[in-house]
Each structure stands twice: as structure tokens, then as C-alpha cells.
Image (cartoon, rainbow, N blue to C red; front, side):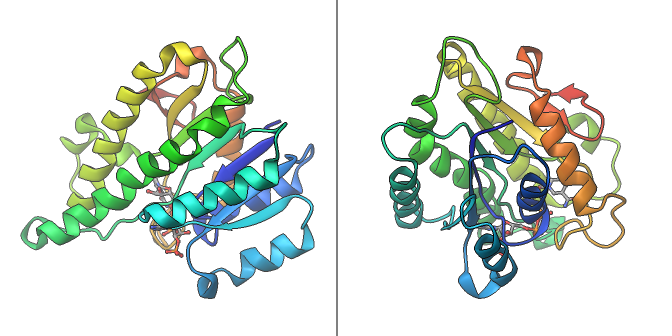
Length: 247
Ligand code: NDP
């Protein structure tokens, strides 16, 4: 099991599901740093954290804001102390406004890029030293890893057979894939495990009501999938509903 983990965007949706899954299945992680942006929208998470205050540490972190991310890093570092590092960072926070061709403008396209690409980069850059602290001489996803949550809607092959388009979301997630592959290639010798994960189509605010997967099922799939990741998955986009890889 992963010892110390940070997940962004855990006040609702898939992120909250992952926290609930981790806390209700043994062995529990030692510490779950549960990222949330706005205290007013995070009551359920904060209540859960109170019930498991020895494991769940809520961390206020707006992935689009340098100051917020740096403050969060200091908090996490303090809690981990000198002897511990971060074993897994899941960049889960994401946005999508379902922008159609005629509605594209600089603001809505950059907004998606700012959150979905630069958000993952900003958080990774800040927390990388804490992941580096726990690296061993073998690459192991449970020991030291960065998982970026993407989507199979980022796939160019899939887009050419689609009838549904969300330009802001799909373009920004395709960029997240490229960013992640570049970073994975750059860090290939570091023994930090880096991969992208598609959680399936999940019933959340973002996924909508018609999605076939419940948050509970998707969260279980995600943790099972991460736990099973091997070298062959390094730098790839893994579909947690079936373990297949692309990108
Ligand atoms: P939701 O819209 O339900 O939740 C999004 C989460 O991201 C919220 O916790 C939200 O917090 C947080 N968030 C957004 N912007 C920021 C920010 N700037 N800083 C910190 N947190 C932020 O989405 P899902 O749970 O469905 O999606 C989670 C991830 O899974 C996303 O990356 C998404 O692209 C991906 N995904 C989802 C699929 C689905 O079918 N649901 C399919 C494929 C991928 P707040 O409440 O403050 O807005």
C-alpha cells in the first residue's frame, strides 16, 4: 500500500471517492493529504477528516495559484517531518466547460490549460523534492510516483471517431499527456514512477448523470490500477477500467 499520498481536488467527485476508498480499505495509508480549494465547498471532506484525523490531513490547495501551492507544500513538508517523504502524488483536480467550436475563445481555452496542464505542472514542481526524498534504487509506483489524471477523450485516434467534442477539455488533456510524457522521459533515470490515468466515464459533476461508473467503483479501479502499475506502464496513459495503455 502507498504510505504517504497527496491527491488534489478531493472535496468532491473522484478525488473524494479516492480518499473514502483509501480510508475504508486496509491497510490504510499512513497519511492522506487531501487537497481542497474552497472551505465553503468542502464540508463533507472536512467532516471525514475529523473522523480520521490521524490519517486524513486536509490541505488547502488551489492548483492554479503559486502562492497556494507553495503554502500547501510547506504544510505537507512540516507534517511529514525530516524522515518521511511523499510516496504518491495524484494530480486529480481538473476542469472542463464542454466548449463547442463556435464558443471557443482565449479565456475558456486558456482557463482549461491553466488548470489541467499548468495545475499539474505547478503542483508537481513544488512537491517533487518530497517525492525525491523517498526514491529508492528501483522504480516502484508504491514507493515514489506521480500520477496525472487524464481522459481517453484526449486521444487523437478516438477524437477522429467521435461525435461529441469539448474543445477546452480535450485540447488541455491532450496537452497534459504531452507534458507528462516529456516529464516522464526527462525523469526516466530518477526512479520516480510517472504515468497518466483515465478513470473511465464517471458520474460526477464533470462526468454527468449518464456516466456508467459510480464514484465508488471508479475509485476502487483507480487504486487497484495504480497499485498494479509496472515498468511497462511508465509514461503511458492507462485506462483504469481495463488496464489497457495508450499515448
Ligand atoms: P469534478 O468536477 O466532480 O471535481 C473536480 C475537482 O477538481 C473538484 O474537487 C474541484 O474543486 C477540483 N478543482 C478544480 N479546479 C481546481 C483548482 N484550481 N484547484 C484545486 N482543485 C480544483 O470532476 P471529476 O471528479 O469527475 O474529475 C476528476 C478528474 O478526473 C479530472 O481531472 C477529470 O478531468 C478526470 N476525468 C473525469 C472523468 C469523469 O467521467 N468524471 C473522465 C475522465 C477523466 P472545487 O469544488 O473547488 O471546484
